[in-house]
Amino acid sequence: MRILKVLAAVAALAVPLLGAVPAGAATPGCQAVPAGGCSSWQTPAGGGAALDVWQQRAASDTPVKVYRGSAVDPAEDLELVAVPAGATSTFPSLLASVAPAAVPGTDWVSIEYAPDGIPSGYCVSIIAATERAAAALRPCDIYTASNTTYDPFQVFDKVAATDADGTFYVFKSVLTGFVLNDQRGGGSGSAVISYALGDDGSTPQQLWEAAG
Image (cartoon, rainbow, N blue to C red):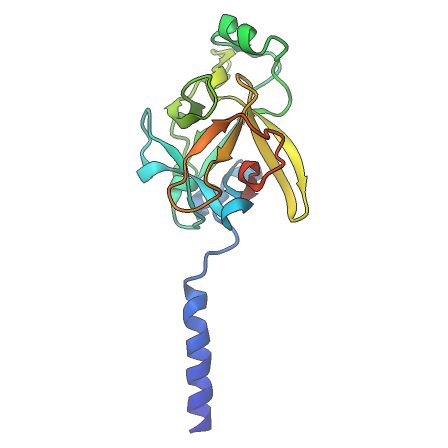
């Protein structure tokens, strides 16, 4: 009888563990991409809320939000694509008027949606060069041998930001200087926006950490 009680207690403890979210949030297909090229990006503001493509839709104008971290949700699989120093802006006059000193740097990246590790051709983009502009998917303008330009609406400077809980990054728009920001501080459905205030990563809502 005592053995049965012990087994029952162990089983009761195991139930919540089965529903726990693994530390690595990216799907297995995303994790299989070489050199960590694909991962989920989580913010500490919401206890592991991650950048999330709404309803897994690889289509123009699909909102980019945050949602609870998951190891089985391909909506959170993202690939960072480097913008090389030789690239030029697709909209040179616009970029010059907003950020005249901006030139591609070693940490300039596009954030491509890559469900299960497969690039979709759609990248996270701010939809207007204004404060609190929403983020959504737009067709990627990624540097290749035949295309030497980049779209400043979808390029971010990945800036390291030291935090007591680990190494995080700020994704700062090269067009506006604002950052991707979890406006409501985590939680299901929060909008990810290009934000003006405190754009140095000084608040948890502006910090992102690769997971998986």
